[in-house]
Image (cartoon, rainbow, N blue to C red; front, side, top):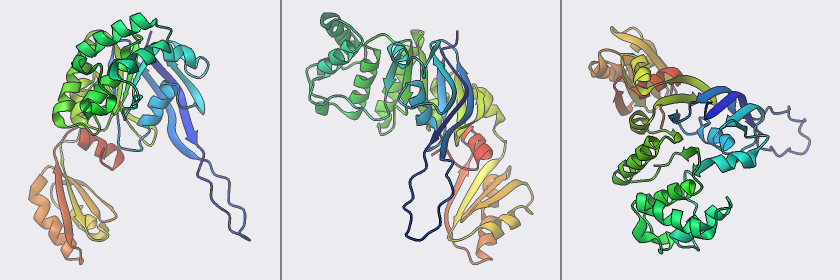
Length: 327
């Protein structure tokens, strides 16, 4: 049985209300904001699965649906064989959730947070306390058991969130961008914890927009944007799909469309596009083109503000699929 399945999953949020001016004609009906669009997805039992995409791609909405916090508009979602729409309480007993931003009860100590959370799942206080201390030991913060949450660093608070998610021994763990805001050392430390949990046979679903994180940790990746599934495979297979061209981005101070027209005539350019002041060029010649691209802009009265090169990678694949960066 798959740990997670979605079938034609769709989520539409109501459009923001627009205040009508006196005497204005009625506004046309709004179709709302589509966050997830007919998504079919499956995650195998015991898999470390990544959901990759930029801010606003639909990652957090998808995690919200699978953890029962967001209602489905249409379609179906199953977690551990249970419908999130029809049996949300049963789903919650089978999952652990690590939110994007730590949200412990700051009036309680570290161990009290774990014990309090465990009681929601009918775990006796003595057993909850034993499990709590064991988890804190495994996660390297046993010495903080009696401390208040505000005495913990950001990385320690995220470890507390993982401990809380594990107190009832869930089958599936969800992490919504778990390393956002952490320093590099704390991020690497958290990676090791996640690898250990995966090694225990747990199913882990993690949303992220960090390329390296997805590449290093995940068995498979789903790349999504605007609620649609764009690609799904192992990190190695996805990187193999990335175009062999280097992406050269030149930011001008005004519209770059004329420079894009010139770039398309250059030798070795496979694709050139303008998005407002941003000129994006795909070419095997890479940085060799930069002087000519600058000249193309300046000949039309444009001034260069920034230049960036990206080698073939998951990011260049994403840019090719969507026309924008992950971050």
